[in-house]
Image (tube, rainbow over all chains, first blue to last red; front, top):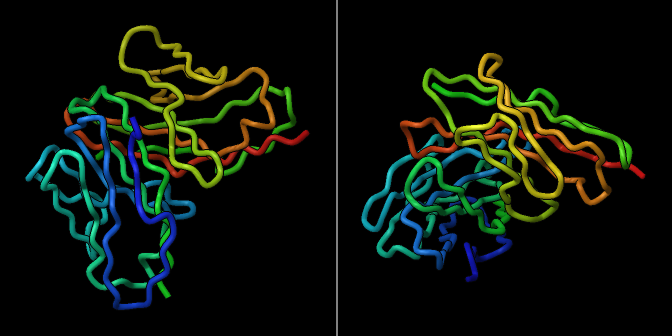
Length: 113
Length: 113
């Protein structure tokens, strides 16, 4: 199993540009989520999905869109990048159920100029 | 609403010394508790979790944590740290009635020779 994979590893954008952060998992997990990590703030939930075709907002959803057309993939779209979106983004997945362990991808480091 | 507090943002310690990383939480419902570790430039991986039963939980790399319901704490301990334990450690809770994982702001453990 590759686990949770994310691409790209690094990205530099200019303000106003759009891009998609890719996330895939091969563990047949129903639940997938996106977090952003900022210094001194821990990880904050952006969006999550409990299965294909179902998505919902997390704590900091503004400026981001998601979709879940397959079980495996959960892309995160930045519609119009802003410097405040400079962060490290982590995708995670797990089986459904609050006891289940969440597995994280290696992260995407995004710089918005 | 739930929250997680990690009181120490940084903990410096010498190699082979014991260490305790503190975590307190606030929740109106019962929670599952997790500790994750993040090595430099990597994603998060699970150290240990408390779901039920014995309040002393043992995890990977010699770490253990004790759940104290009356004090709403889940402190992480290791009797003798190694240089390789240098990393950031995150405490997280998941309420029994939700899918969301709520993180603390993290504690950076720096082990010196």
